[in-house]
Image 1 (spheres, each protein chain N blue to C red):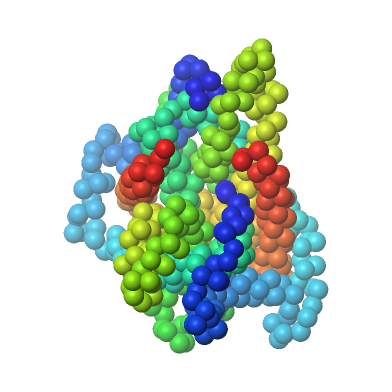
Image 2: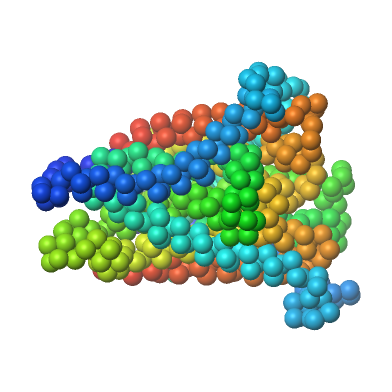
Length: 264
Length: 304
């Protein structure tokens, strides 16, 4: 493979130039949060724990709480609605797979800003039936995360022969619930973990739908706080980006643990 | 993006089910598909239909071409023009730089720490939080941004011609910031599928590294590159969060104009402008994504 690879110098030049483009805004944001009236200090970071400023930051904590609930419900949709359907399609309707894949990847081609126009009337009905609890937004988010979750889970399904596994379990007398929970789910765990983590990341970062439906989530709260305290918004931005980064690292390490075994 | 690799599972899957439970088991299996399909119908298909339909009907439900006529309004046309310009510029720049990053990554071990770091960072920047990207750019090259003031210190005035960061040109840098990582994510699989044997064959036949790229590498990668660029275009065209966080008012691009028409009763003297704009967006994004998958399918020939 080395015959295709660029020379060490080329690699460094590309790495440094592009790396700088990404590092400068991150570093600048960090220095921005350190700004004090005359010099630099950690005052804006310490302010997060300052009771006097608690009221100012309350929207963020409320939004973050709502976003976490939404993330939980969205993950539940992925695990208990999407995953069983994917297993079912794989086992019983292999001919439907291309169509199913098309449906699952469809949200990539439909801008969220378009979906929001049509979601507004639907959520008026939902508010009447289920109330206006923050969690109801998870129905919309389940669709937003669908392409990401689908890809992660499909990669796992393709890597494991779940047909043979399920037939073996069935012939040993296991019922379908047992097969799903105790045979198939453990074999798909890296894909399910990746799908769950990416769903959490996407939900925590979602702004378009929440803001136009007037919901309070983490991102909309950031915008609210930004208007009164730009430093706090930057501190939370850095923390959230770091959090998402760590989650994606975990996804990769988990995926590698799986593929590491099967690698020739 | 990976497009449907038609993976034909050995047929006869239906026959695997024991015959005695044939008919009823099949019915149960079909029923098992219902919850998810119903969910998609209500939260994906229905909202899209409603959005498109609202562009074609008046508020009391009669069919009209009137709203669609809004798409011909000079203001709306200019907004679509802005959106296309922004998407095209950032897609091309993002695609070229992203492809260079993929090329540089070729020399790095696939399970090494550098690759893990780059992949995770790409995922964060491409898919996570357009709002936060906007904030980092405000902290960097905003009116009081760190880089703005550093440049001021050496006598360069970034905003001599007015605060363009809150206008259309200000969107270019933040958009490139999420376009490059998306290119890395979508293009890397194609690039790493280039067969080393082709390079060896090229060397055996007396070629150089340069002739490999001009005669083999670039022709083979061109369709994928083009498909990814189109995907980037669609991505920029549909993204809303970054622009909304940077420009808290105004409607320089189509998604922002949808915001304006959703939050105020009448825009340009029309009621259902949001629906008409949504229809216009779907058409543009739909055509672009269709082209992209068409090209991708052709590209897939080389990826066996």
